[in-house]
Length: 262
Image (cartoon, rainbow, N blue to C red; front, side):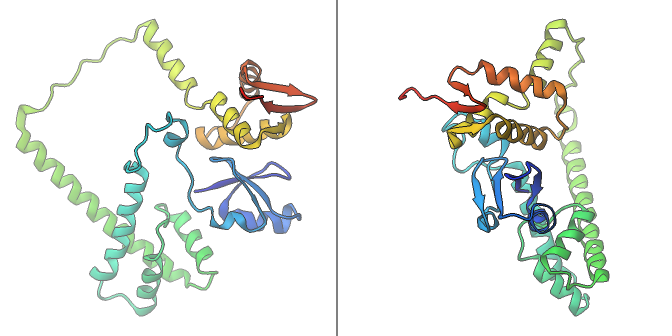
């Protein structure tokens, strides 16, 4: 789901929360920045920003991801959407209101795969005009088909395993981690979020930005990517990375990116 930062108060907002935020909290003109691509949106411009770049695309070297890359999340969502569409054809005894609800759901490509989010999504997308019992019944049918699909997949995998017999690879013995391996794991954990890449990406779009706003944008991106709240240690790490960047200048509480042409 696309997530924005309010440029007035710095709060992170999932797309469905934007309207409520500006109606009850920030009663000012809408001014948002996408935490993934760092594009700014004024007023209602954010409404058309329905999909953004992935973490893989964001940190990959230029040209390393081909246009036809198959993304795991998209494949799962497409499979989920196809399953929902198939219910309309296979469940012939549905009452009219439930069938109409499924036809409505089938028009969306971003239907959530968790029950609570699914219910909230339908309430929001239909303007609250749908019967709650129909929503519950719809989820029940989806769960039924999902479980049947999982069962069929397990049976197929079991058959393949039997056919393969003893030809599969022998299990690899676990190795005791050396000090060097532990250090490597620690490094990889630190590299989950790229402070340097995020700072440079924001500055490449903005050119110059206040220290306070830059820190908010980077920390919001950190929270979204890692799923963890930032701590004092995170802020210290951010400041350390910022000061080490050679092409970045801090002057009068404003951070600027200095290009080779300047």
